[in-house]
Length: 193
Image (tube, rainbow, N blue to C red; front, side, top):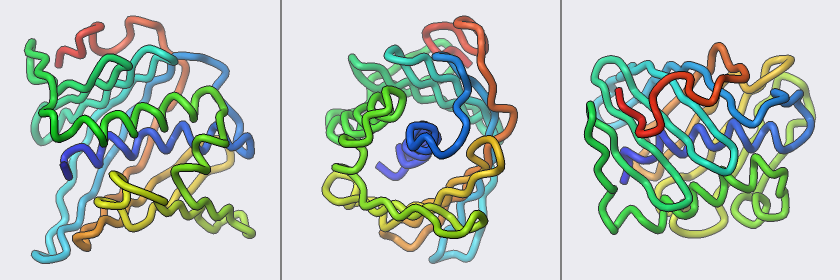
């Protein structure tokens, strides 16, 4: 299940946009790149991966790690899939509750449904410009994996998200080149890498 936490972090980009305190990208379809640094607390090791993402409002979210290995996740209203090469494999049934929650967050964020989002998280907005937003999951399945999330924004978009998970590991994702995209930009509709 920890593998899916990375996918969850991208949904938080939508959350910040929905809060209406940061400028929104005026498009239903957006894309960008990311760099994720995961620090494993029990080993004192940091792992770095990079990749890209694409969001098509009310359609899907594609999150692809490109280095050091190619691995993607596709989240749709119909289900969640792992992408390797030309193969799209449904995630195991055990992942279904978390994936449904992720899709609900994703959908609520893009439609500006703050009521749904505040039902999922306790949200502390910063009083100072440089301070992070703090989100704490209110219930399962997210609270089984996530202690808290910190969001940091630049002047015009989300800069980074840091996730503190229950095992003590910390994942920081920095976002780059976020912009409106063509419907077919990046991977094809199947998320091929």
